[in-house]
Amino acid sequence: EVQLVESGGGLVQPGGSLRLSCAASGFTFSTYEMNWVRQAPGKGLEWISYISSSGTTIYYADSVKGRFTTSRDNAKNSLYLQMNSLRAEDTALYYCARDVGAYAPFDFWGQGSLVTVSS
Amino acid sequence: SYVLTQPPSVSVAPGKTARITCGGNNIGIKSVHWYQQRPGQAPVVVVYHDSDRPSGIPERFSGSNSGNTATLTISRVEAGDEADYYCQVWNRNDDVVFGGGTRLTVL
Image 1: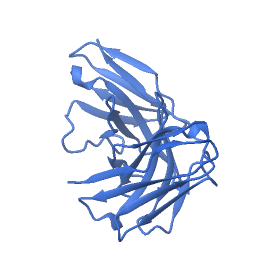
Image 2: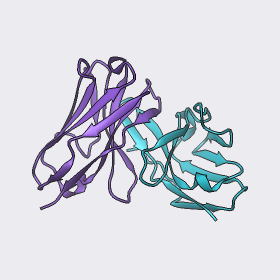
Image 3: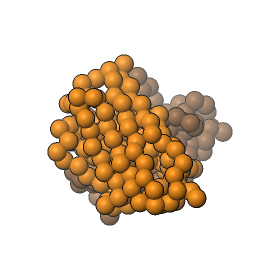
């Protein structure tokens, strides 16, 4: 069974940092592209980052470019999101999601990790 | 940047057909995916590549895409279909866009 489990969320002050993890199981993680998608409370979905299966290609949404860094460790079946210079508007539920190739849908999602940026 | 426009809400009586639109400039040349998100749950893809349906998704869910509008159609709507629905495209190979979402209410 495919599983994606996010962790690392919590309360952080504006300007602070946080690192999210996404543990994958039930599939060959190293062969899949991965994404981070967030959802602010009561709002819609916002894609924020993509990483290729090898980790050599990474894309970011303009809203997080320069502040967030996506990485992966295929040996540990894990995806990461390092978030720096956090702002109140980064408050959201952060999902990791698998995609199955170019222009493909996100076929499996985790349950999300809540990040709250507040003083 | 590319924008996808969805109606905030759609209401339909049980047993009727719901149509949720997703507007975008020349969206017909893009591949559109649709997600259902029930309260407190992660999104689930219900239609992908405009009109394909994942295994386990009822045939009542279908999609189409042409010109500037993609449409998710839910036939014989049931109470369990009440949820938020999002369209999504890869604008370029380095940019993913979601529509603002449509809340489907079953009357």
